[in-house]
Amino acid sequence: MSVYDELKFCSAKVDEFLSEYLNREPKILYDASSYLIRQGGKRQRPFILINSGLMFNGSFDEILPAASAIEFLHNFTLIHDDIMDNDEERRGAPTTHIKYGLPMAILAGDLLFAKSFESAIQLIKKNYSQDQVVKVIAALTDASVEVCEGQALDLQLAISKEFPLRDEYYRLIELKTSSLFKACTVIGSTLGGADAQSIQLMREFGRLYGLCFQLVDDVLGVSGDRSVIGKPVGNDIREGKKTLVMRYVLDRVSDNERRKLLSILGNASASAEDIRYALSIVESSKAPEIIRSEARQISEKAVSILESFPRSRARDMLISLTLEASSRSK
Image (cartoon, rainbow, N blue to C red; front, side, top):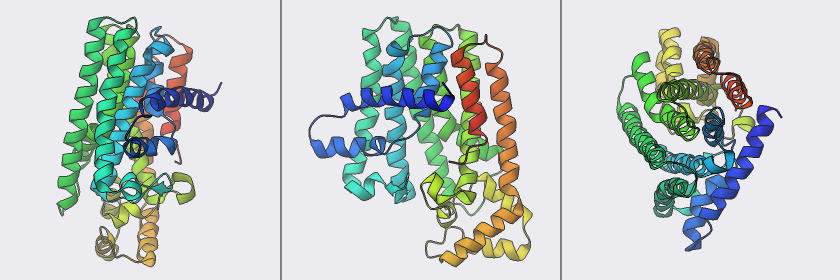
């Protein structure tokens, strides 16, 4: 099967597990908690976690609770991120707080956070040592802390007049995005029985994958197709998101274009014409292509780590996913 077929298979299995944990009372709370999950998604993080385990002879069924735990944690971050960013759409549908109201959305996110650890605790019933289960809980905890740290930096950046330097931005997305991917690879390889050195290599793979994924996501936010990515393309500009791609744009345009662009960035009342103008400036600056190039270089490093391990179906699936991540259009 192709990596896309494998993703669909993995997604179906994970969704079955998730639904078992989200079918309780009060119904409104569990409906809100499962709302984004029911909207679909590739389930990349569970896929990476499972295949990181299979690379070291782990069992799909026994790893499944951990894969579901990471998806619960991911969806918790999405709900709260949408609230903090005032986003009204995700995957082409209303965000959780728009559909269910702010108080219920906050509760829904909190519930998913708790469900993440509830799911991970189920590993005790599998054939894992106490040490392995403790390491899984530790990885989930580390990721949770790092996501919060990254989000705090992002909030500070939002109110600042300055755009981040390249190293500052990489640090931000390592915390905010790579943290969950690192958790996936650490948890998967730990449950697969990998040695300490292999776990560290897989952790670095997860870090690099996350950086590549976020850089491409930033590009899609200012140059993608709404019908493909499922959200308004100009949203990142209207919200004034200070991404690396936007810094590169501002560094490469004329003074007049820069002034005009800065007047549009973060302007909630910017007209559709203003947004189209901003998008045209972004495109003409070639900044998206430069960021894409950086993402490809990062993905090559990530692939080289995977290629240091013996060839296996799981390893090749992760390689295929990594190559797709740097060239994706959604």
